Image (cartoon, rainbow, N blue to C red):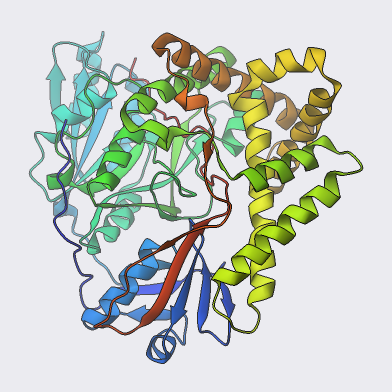
Length: 509
């Protein structure tokens, strides 16, 4: 298990293009940008405003390269890769598999004409696997004993001699064009790994209730918003079902002995080593939904068990929520739905906005920005506390509901919040099906999370990480570029990570 460390920041090449994200708050006549994850402000000089006048920027030297890098790292901008070309000869695909012959056949058919290495992880019917591999002209690496997905990927990676590599699981249908589109991100010399949006697909003629739900809200589907991936940000991990990266940086990087959460661990170690990891939802691949409700729920339980292993290695990075005391109080008040709930929440927003206002540049419109950020932070806190009660802490919440009317009221509110947010963000499933499936999903995942914590006697995967309500971190300016006078980042006391960030792994068995 190894991940190469990055010595120094690598400059973006001339011609590399970026564009500002659509969801930024722009104030003071374009001088102030607010957004990203964690949320930050960037104060632009006159020259920087001129360069970004059209919402985009093309790198043409050290100054513009520094500005583009800052904006990309802060998730204030995204790369424009339409003009980047990647050769078929530069990319090799690795498919770890154990049996699953029909799925392997479909997976290989979609990948033509890319170079493919299939790693047979000690299949029971190795002859059938070999036959399918030969039919598609792929290369076969056979393992004498079952290593699991992480070990199989490492074994295949040892055979790769191209600069880029893709990992595609046998139950994933990813076209060659999709992988080449992902490979374009490697125009950024700092990038080590990039992943697409993984959408669940039912292979039955009449999808059942859990299949309809998983097609709309697969555990591997990180949504429509892309950006850099790092612990504590909105995007905290990538599923290993489909990934593209640089061979030299990834070789031997998966933890061989892990059969769940190895993808989260791998991503976090890459980020710790100074590399860039990105999620690109404009590229979509299909992942087969589990064939039965039992298998579907069992997979959720297994995902949950990975939380304790991640906590043992990465500490409080695995915390299911990051909250400040003021935001936690305000969110709890709203979930209570009492006469005093709105006044308490309003007081929290006012106090947070006032504190933020003192830390923003003294320009026109920043009072409104501070209020917007405080309201957004409270909304995320409500969402996080709802998830904690229904998903991560449900065994304790269920016990509390028997003895406390207040807890019962809070749980009912949390269910309503969760359902409304789900129906607003996802489509293709009705309210009743969504309500039932969400609760089953949460019960299964929470069970695995508690089981893993009890087995390791480590509760860190269940604990909230507490931060200051308006904690600010100053980042170093770039004097020679003179493009950015001030940049600040802060946490509003809520974690923006997707559900199931304790990790996922495609089952090879």
